[in-house]
Length: 353
Image (tube, rainbow, N blue to C red; front, side, top):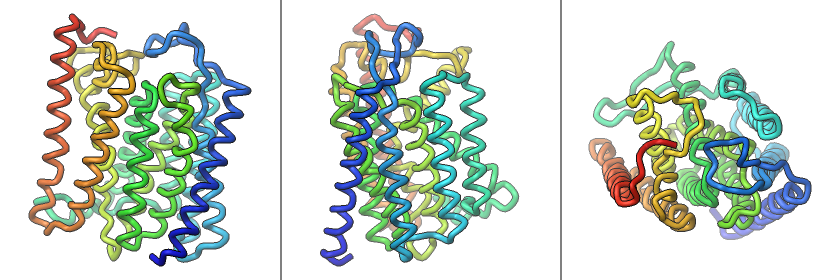
């Protein structure tokens, strides 16, 4: 990429970050309040504005509209591009309504599936997976089901993890910057542009969400971000010549996915209702055991930086060595799990919310 073009892209991203910041300030001035008395799973003690993710959504959608109008080289095919826009607006709109009305989980799940179907209907379907040791696995008839499962699962994983000041916003800012850099290096211009717009949105939001947070992202931000990263993973997997693997996005947000999956599996094995509110994610237990909120958030930022390095290495490795890239990330998460368990034991905490 030429330096002049890079400077233009960065300038545009900064302007989008400004749009995000203005929208976040507006949401603080005219707030949708998150009342802790209504939610057993929250860590805060006083009503705080939520819905700050509106800034992220506006920055992304504005960037995508400019991209559609002016940058043909960075667009996927028309129906797929419009499908991404429509699906993004749909998931954000329903999630914002959820922030206001507090829908039941089954309603949220249905809305997420519907938005995912919009993306699938536009042609953004994962046709195959590059599986270490197995090579190329053609999904055939299972392709829509696998894609739907991934999109809905990633959406909820990010949403579940958004319960501590600055944790998810900072993690996704780093992940999106890394994805933009990797995609640019591989010539994946659509994924590059979309991840850059997401990064700009989070850059405008994060200063207001750093502990003590003046505003929370809300479902409009966390569901939208999880959904878009899932869709970008699928979009990246479609471009073989660009060699941006579908597995790169899961690797970048591995810390979030691990905590969400660990907690879901633990609660299921312990016979707990997996859809009921709780405060027993690993990051929540770390905070409840006395670890500072900023410390927990910074730990996850560190995980993401490490995972970004692994993602860059992943692209350079021969096929037979690619499977081993996930092992260092998993090792770090297992070490984090043991560390949190030790803190819980010292603090006399169990797995009850």
